[in-house]
Length: 219
Image 1: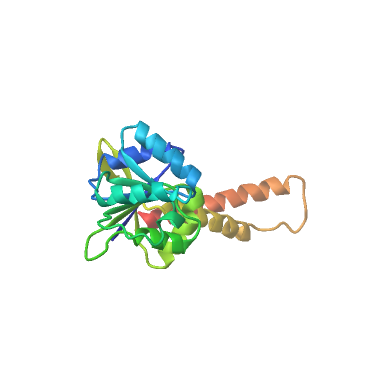
Image 2: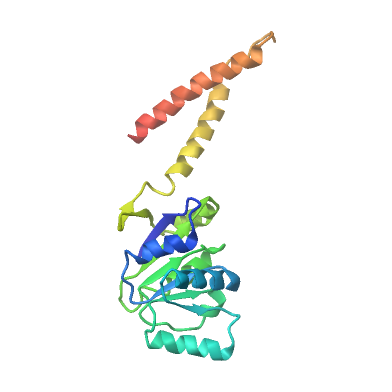
């Protein structure tokens, strides 16, 4: 099973999903969101943009829910916008793609969502839209063995990007270098006017050397 990440970069959710829909050919794709209000909004926006979708959340009446499930079985649409709670206990066959329009807050929900696809020996793809606030969850899932590849869509094609954790690693390295540089700055035995400025200058000089060394290692 493949786990793809698509950076949001303050872009519109529905627009991004429309781009994804233009480059995949799902048998059935479930688009997950966090809550019924978000589900209603996204389903309406996608429909307005010309993508027929089903809608499944806890706010539906039993009759509406039954109709949606019948439509799924009859393959009247390829995309279903759903919430976690509404989809539990429902067996939807032939799910080839799971799209996380909004990543969940907790790991078990992610695992349950993507478990909807790649069943009975079939291939499956999970595509997750993400922002900086989702990185903590992605890191936890990565530590549990899930491998994520970062993509965007350009000119109607998938384009692989730099690893999702490269910026996280770089930030941590820069922070470590900052601390290391301060440790290497010589503290004056006697406090003189302008000593703070001089120490700051020395720290910056040492940090630049450490940063250059790290950039060289990454090449």
